[in-house]
Amino acid sequence: MAELKAAGFFFALSFTVTRSNVGTITDPAFVHSAVDAGCKLFFCMEYTPISAAGDVEPCPLAPYSDASLKKMPRKDALRSPFMESMRDNHDLFRETAGGCALWKNREQVEALLGGKLSAAV
Image (cartoon, rainbow, N blue to C red; front, side, top):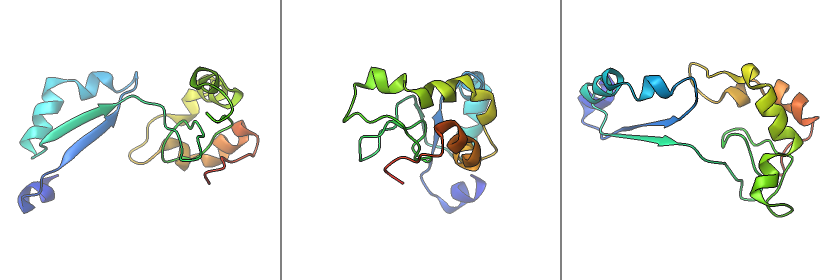
């Protein structure tokens, strides 16, 4: 951030809100430190990634799915065996120092999915 600020770039921080990070990213001290470092915009997301093929995915950077909105409503897709398995095994995919924890642990994700990759891959 220091290099971006020194270069005069407008930059933002994006967060996916989780139970384990909501306290940190909403802490005024954290926000003020990022603003002091030059950050001009914050945005937080809580959404369901859907691929161009209609596959419901747990993360936009890790194209894994066993459910398509072409075949079922969103509510049912979120209750698919794979999504249920992801919720049941969330401890395997704790946040990392950067990047998508699902992609970094794709072997475990593929095992939960039964070796089937999303059509988007």
